[in-house]
Image (cartoon, rainbow, N blue to C red; front, side, top):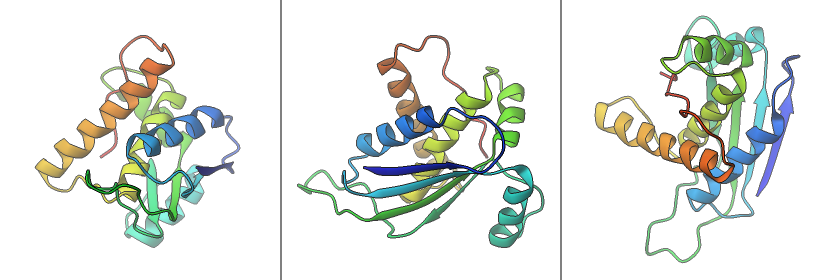
Length: 165
């Protein structure tokens, strides 16, 4: 799996954890190991510009996903998934810090960025949360991936509650 993490935000973030959880999520979703993903960490100003340009919404947001090859998890009967360019995930640590502090289970900026990375991966794979049933599926899968990743690393305490909208 080729995953690039590029921190342009000026904020120190745990880039290795972002890389690791992205790799874990893609493996869990059975995405071809030769697929490519880019994660870009930006400041609030850059995120606000992207949010306005692509969503026509004011202010910075937590995560945005820009799919490329529209890869999807393979069905159970597919022997090998196709490879390709997944696309870009853009994260904003300033928004992540605020969301982590305001979450029911308060958590760090880095824990929120890990959650947002999984959220972004799922969006790249075609998951959405516009409808209640879609939201239940996506957020359930997101929690299972984050919990599995944390368990593999022996991380204790509650996993971050979903704070993305």
